[in-house]
Image (cartoon, rainbow over all chains, first blue to last red; front, side, top):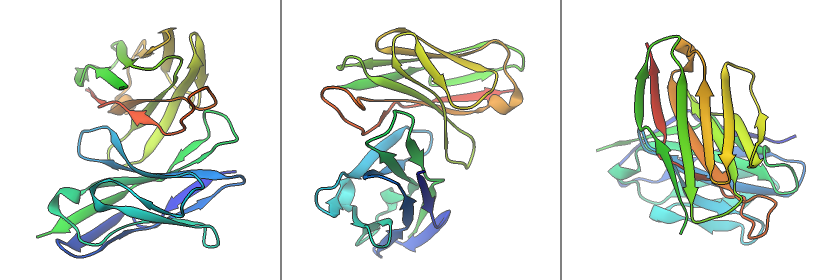
Length: 115
Length: 116
């Protein structure tokens, strides 16, 4: 069975400091892993995606994530936060060998940026 | 390129009234289509998904229903809305398990539904 856990419901950082949003997953097969961002009253936008190629994945807006199989983690990072990064972030796991419904969303992490 | 549309963008409805939300996809054929609901301050809940015309799978029992009358059209309906139906409704598509496969989901802009 698949599952995904976002370890922090809310993260607050100062502008210009690093961002770390944590995600742990559980999957029986070869997972695809995603990070999406959602600004208020907007749809979800794909930030980046891992599908068994390079373990360090670079996404849009300076974000990147590293797939660590031994730790079953896929944490999202950014070296320097910008005010426009304030949003809700979702970690997602899917099983490429399973059915269309096996796409599991984390509960989300709200990122706040302090001036 | 592919685009996904949802309408209306916002909707305020009284309890007990009917509902119809529409989602259409352009630029791709035979997509998998999904309806999600996002309650205030919470994650996404998968409501329905569809792998083809007339094929609907329900993930959560409730007073909502979904239909897919055309390949790229997905409709979410209710005969009588409840207060608990308030939320942000998102439509998404991908091409999981098909030719030109992608498991990445692409989301529409969402519909904000308030039931009073």
